[in-house]
Length: 528
Image (tube, rainbow, N blue to C red; front, side):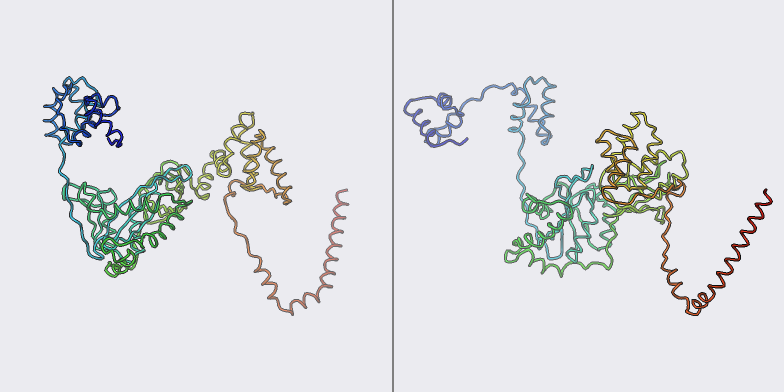
């Protein structure tokens, strides 16, 4: 405890002039007696040795000291429980304080400064930077960081999930080379199992190292100092780049990270040689890096999945549709950051855009319609699902409509017709407005649709009854330009011949009409 000069002066005057004892001075000034002892000893007064007071923990000290000698890392909570079983009556706070005084101290360890050659070594690690909200999914925001040990050049790439392979390939391409050795912590993406010096690497990491010809090397257990360069780089990124950073999308954040790595980070002084910047040191190190192979490593995620009774497979918290003939079969998913491909052996049976949301149902209309045509009893459910895909207000609308006594089947049929005639956006707007007006009726939706059409001065929709069996069939629009070309290719002689025979054609037509009239009159007489 530090005190000001005025309090020190009071302590000295009260002791030497007023002859107050140490306890009295501490009580009157509201400070600890050890502070008074320190001030008086600095003033030349010998420190008073006080006999320690008896404590309820004293009978248990031999047991505690012996236990800590045998198990130095045993927690105070566990020691407290052991002492309570032996009759200790005190509370945990005083016990913990005394344990901290009795626990044997480890001798501080000294470390050698690690030196590397240019192009010899790089260090890799993940950094956790909070979470990212994508729709209903809360995903961790991870930063893949790779550092060249000699030049300290940093590669930084943010992702909404751990993807070791993509981070490596992106770093190698950014540097146009790679170091001969990469150091890893004992994370599951690199090391599956370790017993002493026996290490079982992750098979995908081994495949990556074989493709790029580098040596993966994990550091010793609990030896983070062996890859201190990447540890310090992550701390540097948190303080110098990420703190107070404004960004809207992950792509924007990565663009800012790339500019920072090539700008602010590259302009700092190189710890290996203060005469160089990191950028200058990297230009010297880059020729010493391993050359890249002709083709990059395939970084697509692969996972074996299986569809159950419904034509969907589950991948990364979302459902993707498949042809209904593939249900209850083992399938393989190959996923990139943009697409999800589903394979049956070597045959690609489906491809979807990837979603990082949660609980989404991504489907192709052909997959569902093919099953729908086979399942006539599923017509009503399919109609509801089709409407729900068109508007998020449909479930509330249908529920309120049923509560007011309307037939669900009729309501679904009419709303699907409105969807075919007016389109998804117009139906969504009309259903939402009908709910706001507390009119969950198809007739109300139709009136709103008509009003909106008239306001936009659009022509009325053409109501065409499309059978369910052919609703999903897309008919390719014919190109009528071919007929124009055919007409244009007709030669002038044929045109003149047709024109010259117009009178003959007219006489033949008149004769045919007279014959028809005579036949009709004859039939009329026969009928009479």
